[in-house]
View (cartoon, rainbow, N blue to C red):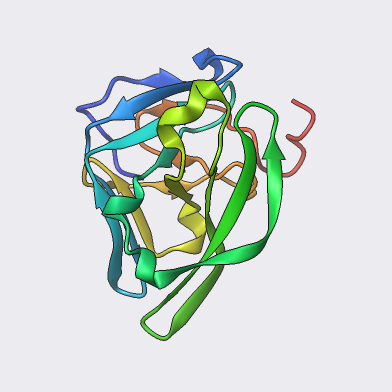
Length: 161
C-alpha cells in the first residue's frame, strides 16, 4: 500500500452510521485485462463506520460496453437494492465485479446508476493516482488507501462487529 500524503489520515471508526455520501474530485481509475474500464473526477464515496470507503463512478465515465448485468441482487439497509455487473474484456471475465443502485434511497440519490467496483475483482483501482488494496472479504467492496486506519470490517470473524 502506498502512502497518500495529500489526504488526511482517517480512522474508519470515525465514519458515521448511517453512512455518509460525499463527492470525490480526485481521479478514480479502474483497470481490467490491461484496459482502462473507468476513469472519473466526478465520483462519490460512501463512508460507513468500520468500513473503508466504497467509491462510485458515473456511467458516462465507464466502458459500459464491457459490462453486462449479472444475476442476483442484494439489499443494503441504507441504499436499497443492488444490481451486479460482470466485466468481459481482453479475453477475460470477472463475474459480479461491480454493483449499482438503480433506485437508491433519497440520501444516496446522487449515486443512482453509478457503479462501484470490487478492487479484488479487477487488476487495479486507484484514488488520486495511488493504487488501492481491496477490503478483505468482498462483501463491502471498500478501497483501502494509505491514509486509512482500522481495523476494517469484512474479514473472517468480523461479521458481528
